[in-house]
Amino acid sequence: MRARDELGKDAIVTNVKMIKPGGLMRLFKKPTYEITAALDETPPKTELSRRESIKAMFKDNPDIILDEKTENTKKEQDDAAQLILGKEQLEQKISNIAMMLEKQMGVKKETAVSSEGEKKEEPEHDDKSNACIELIHKQLESNEVDEKYINQLVTEIEPTLKKDASVENILSGIYQKIVLKLGKTEVMGVTQGKARFVFFIGPTGVGKTTTIAKLASKLKLDRKLNVALLTADTYRIAAVDQLKTYAEILDVPLKVVYSDTELKEAYEEMKHYDIVMIDTAGRSHRDKQQREDIEKLINAIPAEERDIFLVLSITTKYKDLIRITEAYSEIAEYRLIFTKLDETDTLGNIFNVKLLTGAPLSYATFGQKVPNDISRLDAQMIAKQLLGGGE
Image (tube, rainbow, N blue to C red; front, side):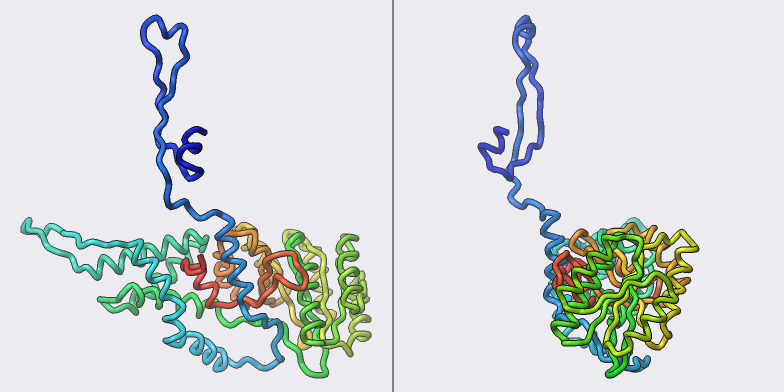
């Protein structure tokens, strides 16, 4: 386009006007066009840049893959929550978000007409508070946080705010609420001298097998643990072959089982391993028989020796996530793993599903690289991203 040739690639067309020739000349001449263009000096962020910011945020997360198995009492959880909400740390996390909101607001004093017809100034702090809450609402909405949970946050925070609350105080309150609602991350645990059997369940296509490979690599190579792999996903030959390839690379055993009876036999054979990671078939959450098959497999391992992770793609529509999580909740209690964070611009589904299920958050994956592109989910980072501080 000529406008871009003259003004550069950031030129934008603001108006196009067709000029028709007058008189008899209209029969012989084509119409001409008048184009008005301007230079956009502040081009918007690209879709890629926002996704890259999400990916970078998790890459910077300390790579803590595994916890020593301990009893988490309510007091320990409360103490941990208070620790991450320490005043200095909190202020550091939210200062840049507060500055962003204040720039967006630019609130001016407005006047209201009193009953006597006289103009009266409204307090500026009321305007700022309302404008700040409205912007926070819009930011959470743009991150696809469900409207129900946004209203819940606002309703809970408003009574705690002082009349002259600053933007930073309002933001701090919302930030704290989000972090507390996300809760403490719970990852795989290991007890010295006692095997843990770890199930990965979830719909087909969410990346269960790749997630297992990433975690197995971390545990084997970084933690030097005695790892074994087991698959009950015999419906897809490719899934077995994929896990077999990873097992050969890591030099760990792989066993294929076709029923809960065979899993019970494998349980007896693999008791001397530290971690046994079990891949299951991606079943339809609508199919009751398939859900019962998964439940039988899980119950083949004693409850005190197993962990269960529900693997979900963050790109799945929230309506579908509701049905999926409800179906799997009928099978067993689980922790949450979210995959494909590199394929989205928003993290709202993490918050939505956490509040919907009450299940603990665990890991996130953000790419196909094994053993990389996996990290422990962190409540503070998610809260920061939801409020616009991760861009």
